[in-house]
Length: 371
Image (cartoon, rainbow, N blue to C red):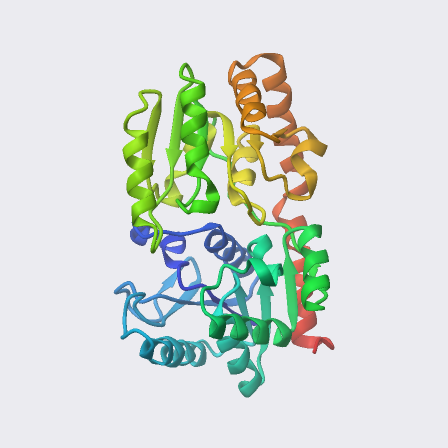
């Protein structure tokens, strides 16, 4: 079976030489899944941005097809050229049986139309709770919202991260979906826990980086590390956070750190903190837990942190500060939660177990009765 992942930002995860470019969690997920499929005999390709790489170049068995440069084209006109036209050209070159996309956006509609015209199959993977909520979509233009809705209805299979997303997708879009857990990179070798509190996220307003700064002010004796890259349209936010971070002697602000260098950061942290207003199912949680790093967060997907004892699901900043301070002190409670994190990952996130819904779904859409 030939599977093509349409993930414009995937190359910085797939190819370490391009890791100076920014990524998000779903780029990690697509790349990990692509590698797992290659190891199981699938013919795998990706449609990615043009970073100057050769077309059809292969990394780890994944063939890449260039679409367009991220900033190319004139406003308004660039929707058609280069974005639509060059994306379709890359899709044709990939010539896959199944095309796989993640994240709400206009691209889903463009690829859905391509699949309909060329008799190919389409799988869509939800990447954020807002993908399932029409009033919360992180899509700026009405045109792009309509394209997303069209693509969502035309997808042969919809995958979600959590039961909450599954329920919201059915309620809001009348689409049945399948819960598929996420893949995670193997843990790095154990190292000394040199950082008390680690925060990792792209710097966007709803990620609430300001709350991490306030947490550092309230806990001046703890060593904080903040990692996050600047996002398009958020330069002012990034500059403001960086300036405030520089005034805090107990906080190290690292900016963007390449994905390939992150495993050791999770291994070296005593506590992982997430301050976001909303999420999907953060990759960072899995990366923390596989390294035995408990998580303190406001966002608890399907209640797993509270239910499994993987840290603490905070309700207020005061609550978060108290729990972070207690866990950062180490001791028996930290040891117990750290052990639960590792055990939970061993029970639920072995690659072969996680892959089940993906492999079954691909088989069904390609050879079954879907749509």
